[in-house]
Each structure stands twice: as C-alpha cells, then as structure tokens.
Length: 343
Image (cartoon, rainbow, N blue to C red; front, top):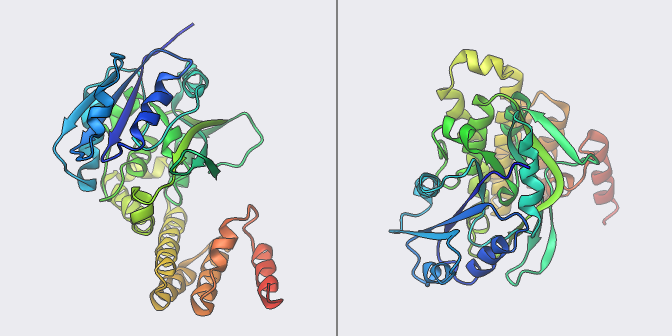
C-alpha cells in the first residue's frame, strides 16, 4: 500500500498556549509517514522553545524574525522549501487534528486526478472544547468531487475550502503555481493559493465527508481580529487573479460576464456585511444597494435586498438567511413574516 510522505506546514506566532496541543495532535496520528515544519514568525512568548522540546525528529522548527501578516506567504513558503513530502497539509499553530485525519485523507490521493482534498471541520474554544461545526459543503455523499473549473468559479464567490485546517494538496500542483500565494490580499494566503491552483490544475478536488480538523476560536486569531477585512478582500483577490490570467485560460474556466457579475455582487455583499458588523449602517446600505442594482441572479438579489433591509432596520436578517440551507425568495419571505410577528 502506498504511503506518501505528508509535509505539514505550521505557521505560528505567539501561540505558546496552543502549540503543544497542535504538535501532539500530529504525534497522535495513526498514519506515521509525515514531517511537521513549524515556522515561527518571531514569537516572543516561547512558542519555538515548546516545539523544540519535542524529541521526535519528524517535528522541526524554523525561527524567523517577525514579519507579520503581510509576509504570510513567505512564511508558508519557507516551510514548503524545507519540506520533502509529495503531499502538503496546512495546520496552523493554534489548530489541531483528529487522530485519523491523515489516514483518512491520504487515500483520496490514490486517484491521480485529485490535486486537493478537504473535509468537515469542528470549532473548538480556547480550552479545546467543541463549540460548533464548520461545514462549507452540504452533502450526504461520503465523497464529492469538484472539477477544477467548477471549483474555481465557486471560489470566486465564496471560499468553500474551509476550514483550512482540513485542506491537503498535491505538492506538484502547489509548486506549479509558485507555492503559496498572497496576491490581492494582505491578510491571508489560503484563498489566493486555492484559486490559483483551481485555475491552473487539471483534474478535480475531493471533499471528504469526514471530520478532518479542529479550528480553534480565540480572541487573538486573525479571523477574529480581521474577519470583516478578510471578507472584503475576497473580491480583490478574485479581480487580481482575473487581471493576471490570460483570456484563453479564463474562457476555459467558464469565466464570463455572468460569473464575474456574481463574484462582484458577492464582494459587495461581503463588504456590506462587514459594515453591518461595525454598525456602520449608512455605509452598509450603500454596499447592499449597489449589489442589488448589479445583481443578476435571483438568489443574489434576495441577499442584497435582505442586506438593505438589515441596514435600514438595524436587524441583521442577512446573517439569519446565511444560516439557512434554502436561501431563496421563499426563505426571505419567511424571515420577513417572522420579523412582522415581532419574533
């Protein structure tokens, strides 16, 4: 049975409280052919000392001077350059894995057409207690395949490859795009990298309907501090990729005016959601109104309309709508009726 080496890239910064649980979740894996490269971004709390305290030679630590989020791709690529695995997985220093993650996921790459795999994630709190689920793909199937062009088009609207703690990629496909990318973003590398891979790879991505990672929620993580900005940057990442890809490649991916319109509208709605989160209701209304004027798809018009109503009423109907699986005009009508009854 084939047992490819899995390289685990673990960026870390001031995560001494969590890094031991992270490393120990790797040491506990039933699949043993792995290496973990922790790339420390100049921590001042002893994070690298914790990592270097492990005797297992498969766990290594690279110490870098602090460079921050703007150099995140360089941090990831430092780990990639020091690694040797045929497969590459991402495990940030505050996250952790279930013990069967690698054993389950490596099998997906027995199919030579798979360039990327991901799965269901759970949310855990600062103490490691389960506090929710994070599932971007709703399916009853054990495995669901996405053609690379279909994945690209979906990613231009929403990052369904979440949480990143569940993602594993084929090294050859990652190296083909020059490693981890941060084009169009100052805050994250996952979405730009996955978009570039989907745009340039051939084959498909594989969603496994298995629990493949535990994503930790805590006050100091990037998504908690900068989540609204990250949502707003989504469209910037997409438009930067559009600018860099040649027209023939874009056509082959099915990128046309309709797909572009949906990406732009999704970006405007994300910006409006960010403004709602900061209670900047006038700015939120402007973003949602622009999205409503531009939207072509019925579901996008519903989202934008709910956003406008949310900004005017200062009650976030849109958040409730995103929590539903059947995001349609009928779902919107139900929300409005509920509000009218004073619920």
